[in-house]
Amino acid sequence: MTRIQYYAAMSLDGFIAESDDTLDWLMKYEGSYDGPGVEPMKGSYDSFYDDVGALVMGSATYEFVLDHDASGGSWPYKGKPTWILTSREIPKLEGDDVDIRFVDGELASHLDTMVASAGDRHLWVVGGGNVASQFADAGKLDELIVTVVPVVLGQGKPLFDRRLPGGAFQLAGTQAWDNGMVELRYEISP
Ligand SMILES: NC(=O)c1ccc[n+]([C@@H]2O[C@H](COP(=O)([O-])OP(=O)(O)OC[C@H]3O[C@@H](n4cnc5c(N)ncnc54)[C@H](OP(=O)(O)O)[C@@H]3O)[C@@H](O)[C@H]2O)c1
Picture 1 (cartoon, rainbow, N blue to C red):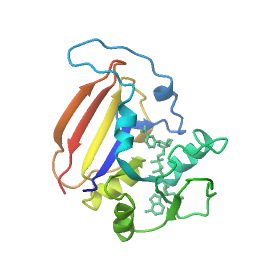
Picture 2: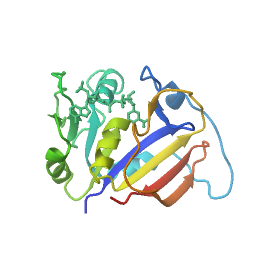
Picture 3: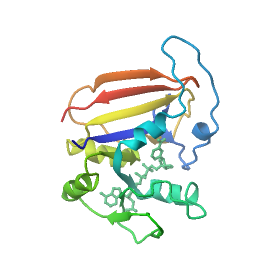
């Protein structure tokens, strides 16, 4: 069954990007940890990504990916439908196995189609925090998988951009990685 998963990396003080959208704090982070239960981080993204059937992201995240990972035309999410929330006319990357779908307006009216596009795998809510909050507000976020990076930014783009309905999330697992990051998994009840 398709689950809707928000999978993101977050600074120790709750931000997923700097105010100017830069991610050096994440991309250039180096650290180490050698304590009990530690596992290599290498391979963890691939293992998550193998179970992703489709992705959804806000236009700012899409434009960031276009400017960085996809420069030169190498879209990182080939073969998987990628839904972009936007109210604007923005460039649509084309290419072999690139499946970008723009949608606008109330999330609820697109949810069934997004979930169906994931087939028997999961729908990855890439971000940002406003998009993740729309899913949570609609009672449609099943799981949060957040990797905590031990840096403090002071300000930036938040993991969620508002107070969410419902109570506390239920901790479902933790994993310390060998680079000092920690993955926290939470189940979210509607
Ligand atoms: N650390 C991580 O793991 C992680 C994960 C994801 C993103 N990020 C970073 O976070 C930053 C972006 O986050 P963000 O929160 O600023 O922006 P975002 O969520 O990527 O994009 C927000 C924009 O999406 C459009 N949008 C959202 N919901 C919509 C709807 N229902 N209908 C129509 N349009 C809608 C709106 O723009 P328009 O309508 O004007 O197009 C809105 O301003 C980037 O730097 C990205 O790289 C980091």
